[in-house]
Amino acid sequence: MAISKENTRPESMVRITTPELAQAFIDEQIEAVRSQVGDGKVLLALSGGVDSSVCAALISKAIGRNLICVHVNHGLLRKGEPEQVCEVFGKEFDAELIYVDAVDRFLDKLAGVDEPERKRKIIGAEFIDVFAEEAKKLEGVEFLGQGTIYPDILESDGVKAHHNVGGLPEDLNFQLVEPVKFLYKDEVRVVGKQLGLPDNMVYRQPFPGPGLGVRCVGAITRDRLEALREADAIVREEIGKMEQVPWQYFCAIPDFQSTGIKDGKRYMGWAVVIRAVNTVDAVTASVPEIPFEMLCRMRDRIIETVPGVNRVLWDISEKPVATIEWE
Ligand code: XMP
Image 1: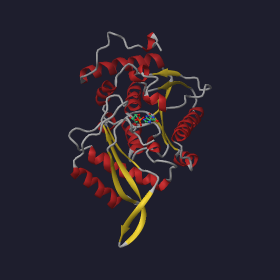
Image 2: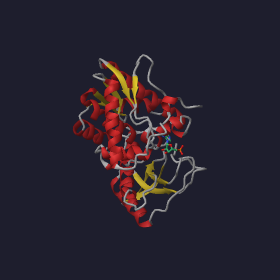
Image 3: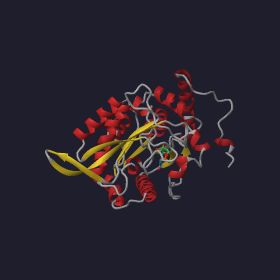
């Protein structure tokens, strides 16, 4: 499908590779947002991912508290993420932040659902419902900020679009504000850094929209989800120390138990899976070497500190034939 002229990156646009170029881009976009929005209010769904965070930071520099960010905690975020979004956007940037604790709502809807695409649809649809409910409570909002980036436009039938569902209900009739829509991912990161966002936000690895929901294999239970979140934090911390950090690295937790032994007694526990991959386009993926010492350290930390887990596995499957995510 051909891309419309207004969605085509201007040929004259230089690639943003330095802080100076990033600053020039920021100044230009601040002016552009101000002239588009005037005194109007902009609503933005802030996940904490690099695209929505950079978009939010830019719009907040332009219009301050006329930017209203909504952060929906659906219970499937990684350890520390909701807290970081609230810290950065509630305190360091001058934006209005609405934090919605929707954990019970999502987990109740997902209870007993084990089919991956059905889980994705429930998470996507519920997210839109929660966001739309928040939007309807607000008055005088005409604009919707979106962290669309150029690959989203170019690959509108790519992997991400294939997995993601939904859109906003039509009765929410917003004009879009998309200040980073002509940027490639590496440029978004340079701009984010220049805007003063923390490194672990700017250099974040890709994280699927349905979050830990597709890594807590089968029907999600709260205790297994919690074990996944804790083990995942350990794996991200340890693998994050590698000199060449893999493209994506995380944990999954299958929905079966196996035998363990503690104090001479046998018991059933979960197995946690370490997954790390390198890829260019997520269509194929290879598995980087992880030092054995690091694997053992992750194993020990997980077994010692994560309740219910008695086994740690390393997934060395490549894509194809395995997908990157477990679901
Ligand atoms: P797979 O598992 O298909 O993943 O090899 C390829 C890339 O896509 C990400 N992924 C998703 N991203 N919503 C997203 O936004 C999703 O439902 C989804 N499922 C997979 C995955 O993390 C990997 O980077």
